Length: 422
Image 1: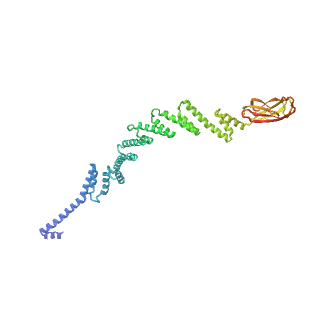
Image 2: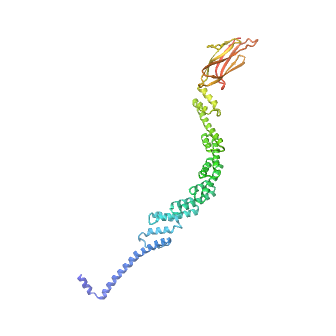
Image 3: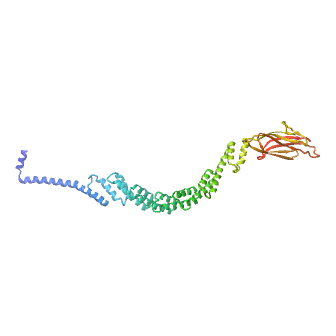
């Protein structure tokens, strides 16, 4: 330290001034450097953000370009400010940029604004579906209003192209907007008419159902029921009885309550008849007979029931020929003018059922006589007799037959052969 002091004392005043001047210059240079390197970029950074707050994003971005590279997050700030500057003119690019910036500053809020701006641009270009998607995700205060306006405009554009069902679909979520509710019903009615004319009755009915679920229009309920009635007839022509029955039920009171109810009953019977017929063809005679009996006199159900009964409970007649109706052995030869009795026991048939029997005698000269016994109860005895009057001056004889048959079906259940000995 003493040496330094001695050295300082030994220097001249001029030399001392030179040393002090050099040090001051160094300090000044350092101060200038620090001001330019740190203070100026900081002021430029703040100025850029202030311009953004003043809604001059382009000026803010331009200001950021003057900030020296490497200062803080200036590169990210420039992306942020450039995206903000693009918000109105290039919203798609701005949206992508803010999405990439993630949580940087208020990029997420700006992303929503970019969606909104993009929605406006897309709607102007006629890309309504994309515009709706952008408005819906924008999160802006009047996003719902913009969605409604977009859907309404889109619906009108679709209707102008005769796409009425699609137009109505666009308005379904926005029925509180202007006259959208009434307009939607009009579009649905128009679409239903077009579907009916194209032969798409189910489609037309579905559209009218939407109309009526939304409160309906004049005669829309009647029109829906009219279409159900037409659809029932269409299904009936296709023999789809289950569908026909359901459609007839939905017709309710068209053209009248009585006629609609009659159609329902008819289609129910048709379905039951087909089911019974299937059982019959499968030789399930017990099931078929029960099904046909339930149908009463519908179509030829009674005839089929009788056939089933015959198949299940076959009628038989165990009888004898005699001259007095009491014999229990067969008589095979008779004399002229004898009474020829055919008696026996009727068996088979459904328990408790009666049947009409026809006895028919055919002699050797092909002459016939008949005797009918009505309502013969099964498992009971009975019969009838014939008298053969021998023709005068005829001495020939021959074989004769008596047959026993079911009157309703003509089925022969017994045959007896005998001779007349002249």
